[in-house]
Amino acid sequence: MEVAERPALKGAELIRDLVTRLPNEPGVYRMLDEKGEPLYVGKAKSLKKRVAAYTKPQALSARLQRMVALTRQMEFVTTGSEVEALLLEANMIKRLRPSFNIVLRDDKSFPYIVIRGGHEFPLIGKHRGAKRPGDEYFGPFASAGAVNETLGTLLRAFPLRSCRDSIFTTRIRPCLQHQIKRCSAPCVGRISKEDYGKLVDDVRGFLAGKSSEVQVRLREQMEEASRSLEFERAAALRDRLKAMAHIHAHQGINVESVDDADVIAAHAEGGQVCVQVFFYRGGRNYGNRAYYPAHAGESSTAETLAAFIAQFYAERPAPPQILLSEEIPEQELVAEALAVRVGRKVQLLVPQRGEKRKLVETALTNARQALARRLADTAQQELLLEQLAERFDLPATPQRIEVYDNSHIQGKDAIGAFVVAGPEGFDRKSYRTFNIKGADLTPGDDYAMMREVLQRRFARLVKEDPDRESGTWPDLVVIDGGAGQLAAAQETVAELGLVDVPLMAVAKGPDRDAGRERFFMPGREPLQLEPRDPVLYFVQRLRDEAHRFAINTHRGKRARAIGRSVLDRIPGIGGKRKRALLAHFGSAKGVEQAGLADLERVPGINKAVARTIHDYFHDGG
Image (cartoon, rainbow, N blue to C red; front, side, top):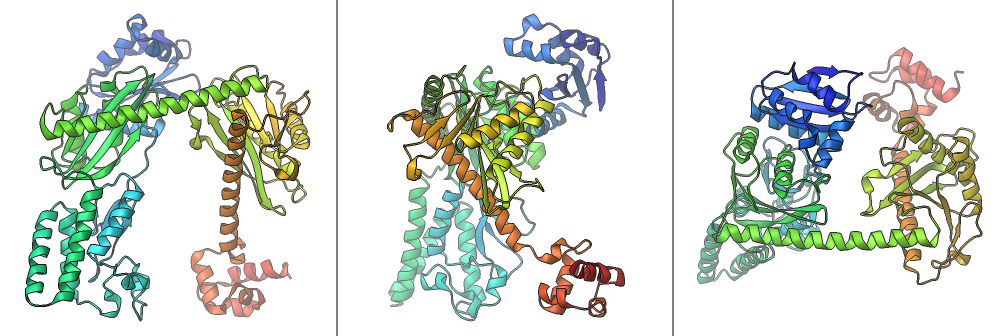
């Protein structure tokens, strides 16, 4: 990697100076601001020719002109081909999230249905995360709900086990799953290995898109059982067929012309873009999910689709076909890059007629409707923010509100937290928590806890963004509490030299009744809003979200603390030695009461470690 920096030059001048020394080769370039933060990541067939385009800002869009003007450094990586450059660009954008790139914001992994290998009675279950060799995966499904519904119905049709191996090996009688006919109880021998294997084959065929063949075979077996007067077996096969039909009904239409494919459509409106992805596997609809890429407002839908596809498939395999609502730039190159990543051919198609076009139209309609709902919600949120500014006489409509709360039990496992809200609602990726560290704090001193949290938060803002250019400074700070909490907050920000941070404390009304809250702001009399005022409901929602987040974080911390042993706090005692000590003495209490000679007899505990353990419990005596 070459790093090029010219401190005396900036913007277009810097780029002109660099272009003369760039190779005429494919690669990836990064534009950085004065702090070294990434502004933009791009790929090029020829670095020299592509970067040269930025030397004439007047020919660029307003957005790109701003980007060039902010550029203070550039970094370059040459690659062996344009395909490699495209793959590297997508990975860098996902990792760095530059402010001028179109960025896929919601990138959670998708759930799958898995059949575990390596066991004579394989289990079936839900899986999310890295895939293990030897297991079979079917999906992806758009949501955990879609997997749970399919899996629940599937177990009624094909009663495979869903319990862990550790539970399976210790069963001595059938569990509740067997009682409700969702497991054939192989753990206690209620089904032979051969018959269980047939069930697994049927599930495998059904999930792989061969459901028609499975249904025909089951129907023939049912008729044969009926003719043989095996009515109980015939009824079981009938129920299996009904469950399969239920799955089909809830997965929407079956598409004969599509086997494994993703359908991706984008719709732009009001400066935002919605990308809808529908998943079809084995011709069945496995659900859909909406995405709203960041920084897409000034780009065309085709450019947004291209950026989305590169990032979306950066960490997940692309199916053999991807159906698009419109052609994207460098479509063949993108298809080649996806094929390189998965090791087989991938087609990017824009169908114009027939069944595939209907699928694209469905995705496009869903994108249009989802974006309309989002814009309506955003408009309502903007109105509430404007009304909030009006009610409390704020200098401007807040674009970022931070709401703070503490949580503890009699001072133990204390944490502070804040949530963030703005025009698009709650910004959960910006939520933060603080472990209360002050050694001199009186347990349960909420004022001191609030001081510590605010001091740490704003001291970091002053250090990292003194010019307030990053958008991470709050326009309003809301604190759960009354006049005392407000005074503590005022003192804290004043000590940091900050006099222009709008502060508000929200105190619950008499008897802690919702709707009778009192609002405290510096230099003003306490204020109450009308019980039906929408701004009151809005502030209540903000406070309740902060309280929920703080409580849940505190509970998690407390649960982890409860799960820790006193042995975890002894220097040099890791998991292996801890297990050896517990196995030898039976409990942590037994370790505490053991003599030095007894500790030295434990396998893996030498004399030095034994002395450390003994001194820990006996103050070195």
